[in-house]
Length: 307
Image 1 (tube, helix red, strand yellow):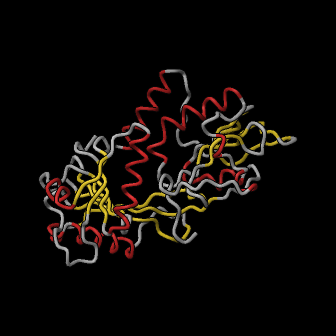
Image 2 (cartoon, one colour):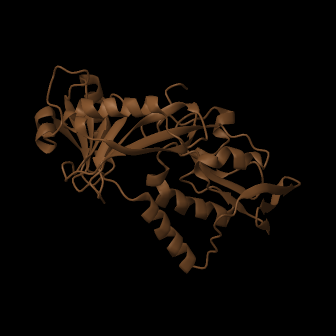
Image 3 (cartoon, helix red, strand yellow):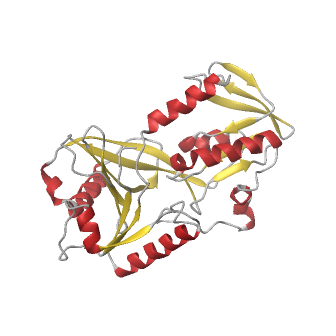
């Protein structure tokens, strides 16, 4: 963990604070530690925040999850890869899927740039590429793919040991192990697979950050980047079986998939092993978009505002 003192979500109005109170109460009822903070407590916890009340987004309070923080995505991915390799899983890098062989409604093989791989069961867990891969099986997913940008400043000495999120504009700020100030915001609201950032969103994120932390105004940006995210229409994932026999999907996690890896991986593996949805993931089937039984949990899986 980089941040040792938790995850703080700021409220900038009484309405936002009321929403955070409901969120905290829901977590407490499920045995998860959560607390509300007054404005004074927030400023004592994070003294470099802008204390002014004469600003577009004044701080009126916050929600805090003390065990929250950040983790290095690449380290987690390689940790899982090493564990899988030690259990006998073959990991083939630079192996692009180019097609799927489907016979009488059942998948029989996957075509790749390194040859054909026969299989009675195929699992798709391809993050932002779910739609084009599913299209190889003749499936059209209820998904849009959008960019999510982030950027870092030049490194400075430690000044922020808490992840700070702003309710008003979906911005977040933290400090990395290298000392960089890491900043991010909301999705780009147009579909794209480009994995390139754009200046308007960089300007938005910088403006949001300086509203909260004016002291960062003289920092120079070092780099920015963008990742692709599969956004479902109800903000919840697609996980389980598909209309093609033997083909399974774990995707559409919006921008919450990294946090869900342990639970989704466990329930997904159980689904493949028993050829039926695990009871915890039954509501997340693709068919919910055909029946109208979508999931109203946009606090758990954010929904793009333009939907």
